[in-house]
Length: 591
Image (tube, rainbow, N blue to C red; front, top):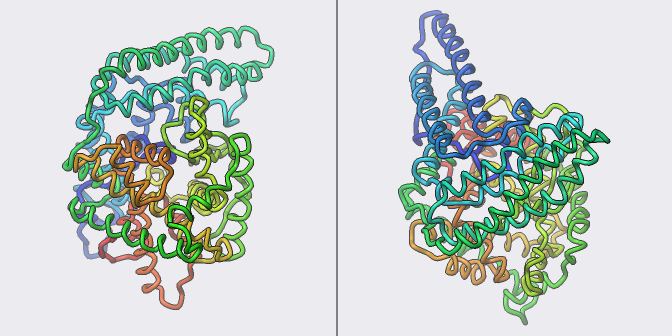
């Protein structure tokens, strides 16, 4: 499981032991004692859930802001070793209370939510105590300050002066966060430090230029307010500059750590985050079979498009047509309306809002190897409606070849599929349903195999429904995107359980996924710090199976739109729990 904001790769959670059953009180003759016991249990569970999320957001106030809880706006995460250990103690106490609640009577909804929180706690404890990224990965330390300030800048949930005061309070705490990085991080993998240097370097420019520009407008002539900000921002900028230099001069030469988390931890992470408990050999075999299938389909389709060229050359010919760096954002923005209108015309899924996301460059603090992402308002955000569809431009430090390879990804056919994934009907559409999700837990926690699985499922489903007018190049682009996710499945497992190197992982993306070499390396390196990024294809396969089982259960009453509407209204549940809601009584496997 993961906690809000959904597009962020932070804060985990998912159901505990796979196969656990929902618990209900025994029946009395008139059912009154059962009803009373369940009502009392619901009250206790609601109190516990409130306390769990309050503790979560107290420890992660930036997440609180993003979720729409603005009492946390002036606070910044304490990443000191003492605070991390205190958080672990809190989680252990919460786990004990939750175990007691789950041993008693719970309603169906509460039992589902309890499993989600159980996974969240177990996953976070696994992260703190075993994976220990806080000791081995500097990326979070240098990325979080920019995200924390940008969260206050980009959404108009309060008057600008009020948000500026909160930003100033957070900026004052940035040096302590970067000091904690120096104290905590030891022996990281080189791949992590390389990316941290990129993030830190970009963040310096963000604090030097972007933040002061916004602050001047927000201060609206209040010189004292701006001076207080400027002092805090200057200190934060200097601290980030020093951190960037420390990463380069001090940490990088001694970055010789191993990123692999090992098979036992990998399996536990999947169990807690996605409620999947398959043996890793079985899981790898499924991924390799899917990669082989999609690769064969790609090769056959490429031959249909141009039998004189190799499949790689056919894919390269698609990528020859791509935007320049300057035209990247307008080019991606132009792909939105076609995808949205297709949903309406073909009755794919109900579109509940006229709001569109704002297409912008990925902020420098968030450039950790991805190409596009979606950042939407939290489910409890009552005022701000701004959503941001981020696309990552080339770095100014890259040579001409790297820039060209990066931009080639954004060819028209692939860009159309990226927009399907990020916006319509992918992340953005699912996220704008968030206020309708039935419980607080489902508004604030999600499984990546649901959110990313839905977005990846949407790519294939849209092509099957006729998106792109049966253009073979669009179909080839969809298969190319599927191959990237298939490679993530295989590479992620092998990086962390089979001693694969990032360089060898990159070969999989180039040879099997037909990726440009620079992009292939970025993809493989992502797997080093995001071990279970197989959740894209995992979720897609689970959703296809759920859809087919749902179709059989509904019979003549089934419609594609009906299934999609039912799915997106429930929130980001692991697919195992989604099956319990959409197919009551069903206990079939998810794959």
